[in-house]
Image 1: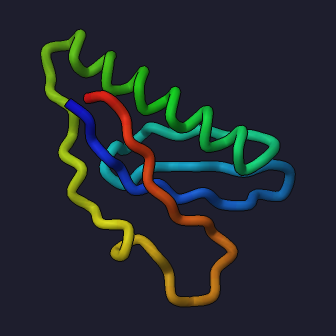
Image 2: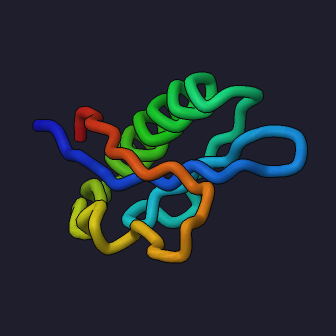
Length: 85
């Protein structure tokens, strides 16, 4: 089973940072956008694996990408990541 989670990538002073509104506490950073997204996919996989090992199910992917997109001309990047749940 796969889930598709909305992800926000933000430009920081020295790198990029990504987070997922539906999976609080799951974040990743990287020097480039591509590196950050690869690390975020890995972080989501590990986070979901850890939840399963603890007897919990994966959090539902309920936040649509359209809800997290800011309309203030922000430089944030919005995408989705599909991971095995």
